[in-house]
Length: 304
Image 1 (cartoon, one colour):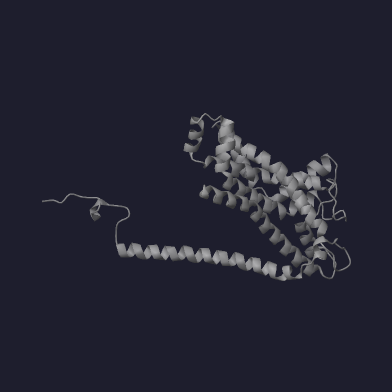
Image 2 (image 1 turned 90 degrees about the horizontal axis):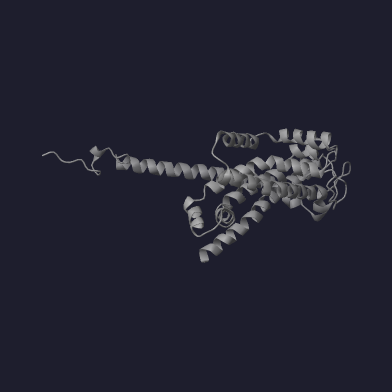
């Protein structure tokens, strides 16, 4: 009598059946391959950080962190460059975060699904991949030539905001779209308006992705040099606490490039090493500052 074909028999053609020993060996091989590749990447990143930080961090001093840069004499500091870096970063984020989030929420929740909106998404993705020097040229045309305000902190900050807007828009849209539709439906079922649903349900649920995008653009903005060189210049005002929006705005990344390529001071190499260490350390610190509130919120949520 012919035996019926069952799901457990080899004749059933089950996609995951076959030689159990061979499948086990392939699984072990793939697992070790993933572990090995991931470990190599992490080791490479840690080694790179160590090479950058080992030469600069031990040599840091308060005089260097808060001192004025010198064009001729040795022993100059990077105080104004660090201040300009944070000042321009603050200006760019104050402009880019509200506009980028608003645009991303509109595309995810309100925009109709038609060819025009599809073309807008393509343009946003294209702008997100445009080299930063193109935005620098745009900043020159807008602030230096059209408004004739010269190389200033204001021009650098606004141009950096333009650079970060496409990335924040796409990250916000994708984060909002990734929220389960059941959460949105439950909010509407409880009587919430669309605005309440967005502000109290969707944004908190998508906050991890949005904050990740903010961390990426903040780190990129803090280490950006091409845009700053073209829109804010390669010099500072020469004062430590100069908050004028129309002062020259050389940042730490620009100062690092300058001492490596143009400076004639005798300790240029040492200044570059210390500046690189500060730059990497601050970028790591920025990521921690944005991440710590999320970790604390996640722990409170688990306890409740």
